[in-house]
Image: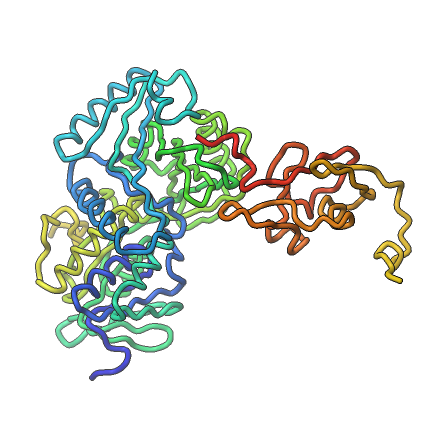
Length: 384
Length: 104
C-alpha cells in the first residue's frame, strides 16, 4: 500500500547520526522518513562540542571509522553552508610531566602506523601554538587532522540537503516497530499513526537501547553523563582543541565514578567550551557542582586567562555508550530490515558521516564497504 | 507637559549622584539601573555587536535578552539593565565581546 507515510527507509533519531544516515541514503536515491520524538539535535547532538577527533583514538576499528569520517566531513563542509562552522583547527594534547609526555609519544607512534599525523611539540614551543597556555608543562603533541563542527547546525543542514528526499517528522515518538509474518520490518507505529518502510534505522543515540527493545531486541546502550561550561563570548583565545593527556585514559575507562579532565576549545561564535566530565548516573540531569568545579579548575590550570572570564551557562548531555565503547552499526540479524546506528559514546559527531555512509551502502548494495565486524549490533548476545 | 515616572508615583529619591559614560558625566538616582541612568541622559546605545559593529542598548530591560551589555568599571558583558548604578561608576562603550585584549 502506497501512502504519504511510505518511504524506502525510516530513520529514528534526528541527531547528527540519524541526519547523516538520512543524508547519504537520500543522496543514493532513497526516500527517507526521519522520526524523532523531540526536535532536531534535541538529545546528545545538541549537548556536544562537535569534536571530530582522531587524537584520542587507539589504532583499531573506531580510529578507521574516524579517519574515514574526517575525509567525509571535509567533503560535507564544501557542500553544506558555512553556518555548520566546520573548522579544521587541529588538536593539541598536553602532558604536565615527563612520564605523561612519554606515554603520549608512545600513543602517537602507534597511531602513526594507522594513518594519524602527530607532531611532538617541546615545552618551549607550546606557546607558539597556544599563547595563553600555562607555563611549566612538559610538552605536547599537535594533531593537525582534528577538527570541529557546530553539531546542531550540522545535523539540521544535513537533513535539509537531501535533495527533497528526506521527510522529517518531529514530535513523533516511535512506540513499536511493526513486523510482518516472518518477523521482517514493515514500518513503525508512533503516537500519531503509522509509517511504512522495509527498513528502520535505529539512530536514537542514548535512547537506542529503548528503541531496540521496542523492536524486540536487546542492545545495551547506556548513558554516560557529561557537563560543558560555556564562557561569555571571547575573541580567539584558544586556537586548537586543547586537552590534557588524562582525557585519553578517561575516555577509555569503564569507571562509573565522576572523572574529569580538562578539554578547552574556542568556537566561531565566541564562547569557549570547557569539558569534559564523565559519570554513569543514569539519565539524571541534576546539576553537579562538583563536576562543574573540577571542570573550571582544570581549564583555568591549563589557561590561567580563563580565571578572569565569566561562565554564562552550563549544560549536561548523555553520551550513548556500549560496554566495549564501540558503536553498533549495521543490520540486526535478529530482525530483518532493522539496522542500528547508535552507541557512539562521545564520538558521535565525528563518526556520523562514516556511519551514515555505511548504512546507506548497505541499504543500496546489501553489504558494508569495510570490515564492520567489531560494530555488529548482536555482539552482546549471550553465546548459546 | 511631560511628567516623569518619578512624579507619577510620587517618588522622593535620595540625592542624585554622578557616574560617567565614556567622556561624559551623567546623573543617576539611587536605585536606578545603569541602563535607566543612561536612558535618562538620552543615551540609547552603549555597545557594538561582535559581527558587524551595529549599535545596541537596552531591549527587554529585565535581564533576559543580553542586548544591553556594557563595560562597567572595566568589566565587560555586564547587563546594564540589572546592575544598580553606584556613585563614581565608569561605564564605557563595549566594542564587540569587550575582551579584544585577550585575542591571540
